[in-house]
Length: 124
Image 1 (cartoon, rainbow, N blue to C red):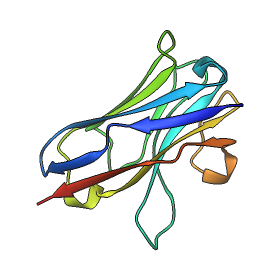
Image 2: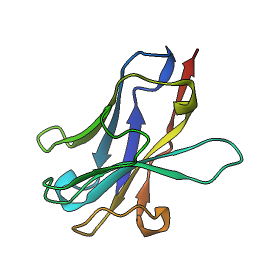
Image 3: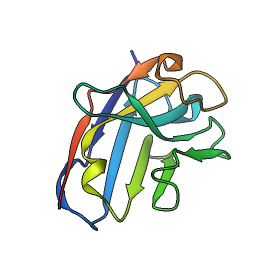
Image 4: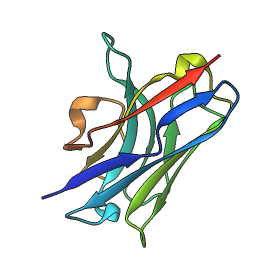
C-alpha cells in the first residue's frame, strides 16, 4: 500500500524559507511523477510544483516560479519542496501527490495517491 507523509509545515514569517518533505512508503519514489498542491479552506486545490517520473522535468506554478525548488532523493525515497520569500498568501494546507505516469500534470484528479497534508502559515 502506497503511503505519502508530508512534514515540514509550520508557522513562519513573511520572507522566510521553508522546506516541505514528502516521504513515500510502500513503493519507490522513482515509480511516480509527483507534485505538491495546496488548498485554502473553501477554495479549490491548487497546483504548486511537480517533478516527472524520471526527475528531468520540473514545472512550477507561476506564483512560486523563481522562489521554489522541487527535488527528489531516490535513496531516501522523499520529495522535497523548498520555498523562499514566503508570503502571507502562501498560507495553505500543502499536499503531496503521486501518479503512476511519466509526466507531471496540474489536475489534482490525475493523481493516484495523496498524503494527509501539512499546514503552512505565513505571518505578515
